[in-house]
Length: 240
Image 1 (tube, rainbow, N blue to C red):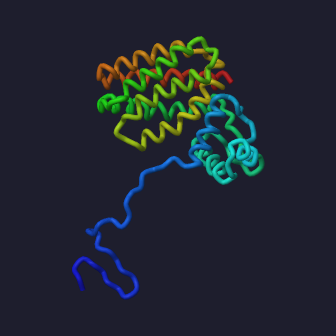
Image 2: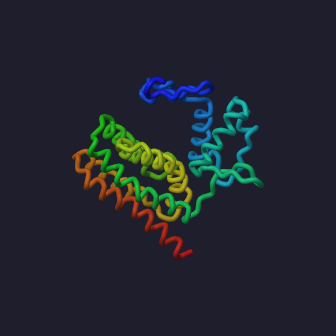
């Protein structure tokens, strides 16, 4: 018997030192991904409103696809909390309250400050350019006439800063919170506290810290930024 190989008549067992049988494949954009992006954009822009029922057949007709990628896209959106699947009502857009948004923000508070600091230390090319671009877009929307567009620009700003961290699991968790954060900011937070100008000023301070390479300051400012939102929401629940 050859050393390192367990040979049986019916089942060959390969030596672990051999070349891998399968090679990783590059991820491609699928039709399901495109359908999910389209539905997500409609929800976050307000074209599909919280509580509205999503009918697979109708969505498939509007998007010009079969029901299969629509069903798969809705399952994916349910995993991020943007839609809810229930036996009685089918699929509907999530209706967020202050408690739901607080929980999402508390998770951000645990992860995002560290991720921004890690990304600052990494100093990856493109981080500052992407963040500055998003911040510039947000600055043009401070009139508050289009709060959804402003919220999405803010989310792109945050993602530009944390996505350079050296932990794809943390980035994925924060990405999943992006949908709920954007939806909840417009439908819950800014309706009670129109704080977008103060948030923009805080974003400028965070970006300046990142640009200077001061990871500790960037982490501290990001933590204070997210914590203010958590405090607002907690106080709201206490009053309710």
